[in-house]
Length: 186
Image (tube, rainbow, N blue to C red; front, side, top):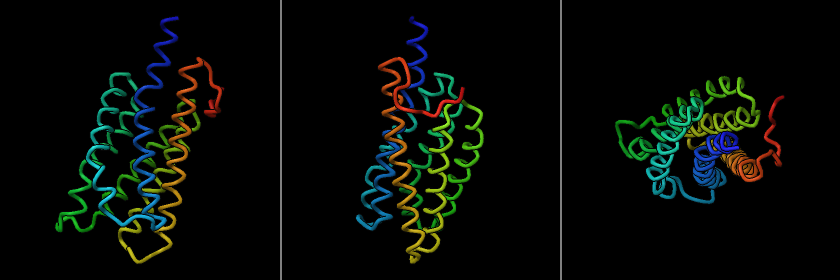
């Protein structure tokens, strides 16, 4: 019984917190994409704190021997911490490349995640990668409303999937069995 509980603790703790942080940040990006907030201040105000949270999740996932989540949240943590510098430093004026690179890393991790049994994870990572691609493309051409709208759409989808993942894993931890579908392959 204790071993069963330990498995649920390892599965649910770090990823749940990380997905809440992802949902919060992607909500801000979606609102930017839907032109509900201005670029910069709202996202910059929370970026460093979310980055610290991502790095905490990375450490917990590492100690729980979860390679995939260590990679995902580690990359997001470093990027979120560096984001204010990327945006404000005139030498790093082409921050779109940094954003596109995070998208490429997430796309590679999407492919890696197909080897694990929860099919919701690759879908979630693919949506996040697409969001980063459209943020990077928009960054290179800020007058392109299509990229801005697609950035908002994929950020919103990523936010919904992150919140669903939190709920599904939370119910799994509490009930001891999957009540909400996680698309677990048998």
